[in-house]
Each structure stands twice: as C-alpha cells, then as structure tokens.
Amino acid sequence: MSTAPQRDMPDYEGYVNEKVDTALRELIEKYRGVYGEGSDVLHSQWLQISRLLGLAGEDVLPRPMMTDEVKAWDSTK
Image (tube, rainbow, N blue to C red; front, side):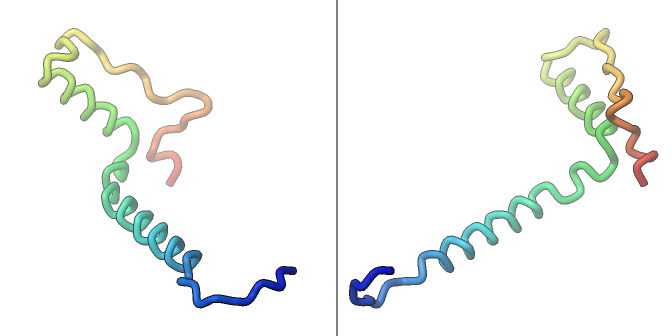
C-alpha cells in the first residue's frame, strides 16, 4: 500500500470507461440492421456490388454459405 499523499487527480478510469461505452454504442448503431437478413443475403449483396465495380464477372456464382458448422439464418430463429 502506497503511503504517498493523495493528489486531486482526474478520474481517468471513469473517463476511459465512458469513452469505451460511447464508442461501442456508436459501433452497434453503425451496424444495426446490416446483418439482420442473414449472411446469405449479405453475401449476395457483396457479390452484386463486386459485379457493379467490375471486380467479379457475371459468370461468378456465389459459393454456398451453409455448412455443417454454419446453419441457415432462418434455422437459428
């Protein structure tokens, strides 16, 4: 235990906790609804954007998103 005299120091722990809380809330709000329809819909949207940008040709097919480990979005509800 320290015997040093206590000084009036700002509450850094409280300050950091407040900043982290605010940052997390902003991040949650930024992505709210983005993944709501499921990964298969999101993947299809990404592929469509890639096609529009010329990064993927029209002949590129989406890969299957469902595996034994990853279940369809509708089956998780």
